[in-house]
Image (cartoon, rainbow, N blue to C red; front, side, top):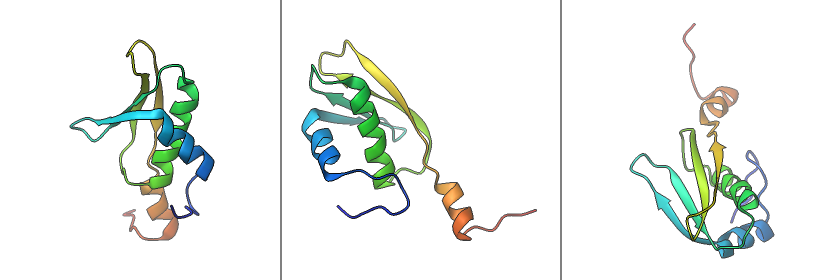
Length: 99
């Protein structure tokens, strides 16, 4: 995994923890991922890790609200992902803005 110098840092330890806890990633038709994690894990922590993972990979160019659910489906925590791609293009001078 390469180092993302523009996005948030996602350590190897956090990546392993996230990867070990996630049982399944379900993608909606709208391109929104939902994460199913092992029961007994801290849903809020895994929501934070899911968001960090998405921000680090920078593969989704739209904003959305997603969730982390335990494997029983009884508990969930939602989180908001913001792609920031539009702002990055402006900051890098890659986009023209009509005035």
